[in-house]
Image (tube, rainbow, N blue to C red; front, top):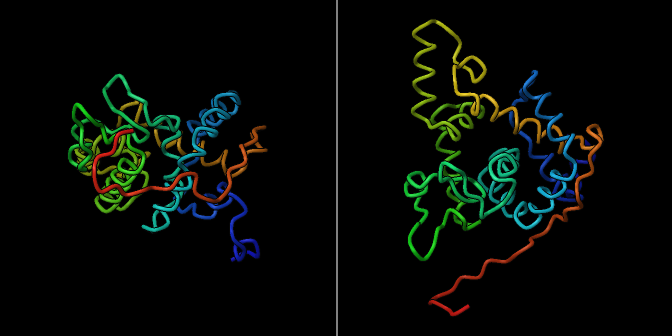
Length: 223
């Protein structure tokens, strides 16, 4: 334990760094993604500014569950922290839930609402899903691959390698390019958050306190 860790976090970035708990991924794909982000300072600035509203809530939830705080950076990879983001494959929200996965995790989708775009509901569902995947695979890199590609696909890729007498870790599995790049993207964002100056970037000041408060309502209100 360092002297610094005995004091409360100075800001949100410090708090996130202290909760890093995943093994690091190395290699060319990570370096290439670091360069991609580092060469787009305007994009990084917009994306991190947008996360200002949501990071505190996500980190609170992760800490409450005892999960690695790297996962708070996943919406940078998924949606650039845009709760209204919709992909060409019809995934929606900050955590990019597909309709069927959203249904499974009790995110209501009807003519009046789409809980995949609700920051509180979708964060709860995303962390439930990530916990389920980690319990299934016992490895965060495989859990993340399954979040992107589906747990059935990852299970089949593991079984295929087992039959061939090959290793079954994330880097040894055959997977689509999008999934192959998925964990390196998150690792690159983690490395930039850990040492922004090393990449010539400056992260916006994010205070370690709530941006919003949630208020429970007992009946419908006209807004």
